[in-house]
Amino acid sequence: MADISKDEQIGIHKGALSTLAKEREELMRLVGICEQLMQMHLKGLKELGVDIEAQAKESQKSKDSKKIDDLL
Image (cartoon, rainbow, N blue to C red; front, side):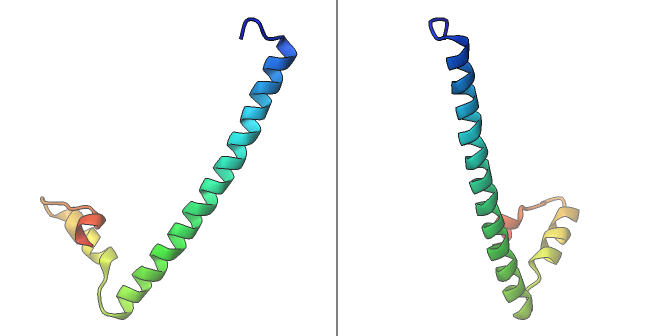
């Protein structure tokens, strides 16, 4: 970037930050959607008598602590 003027460098950095901020917003939106879907499935399991959260807490206490992914 030595051949690029200071103003051009500033523009490049500002543009990159603007793009990254938009990408971060989209990522947060997707995380929110994923969280909502997970909560819906947890609720469905609870209605069927399966308490994944309780199982996860129980497994944390045991020596063979498994991740919630392993329980599924």
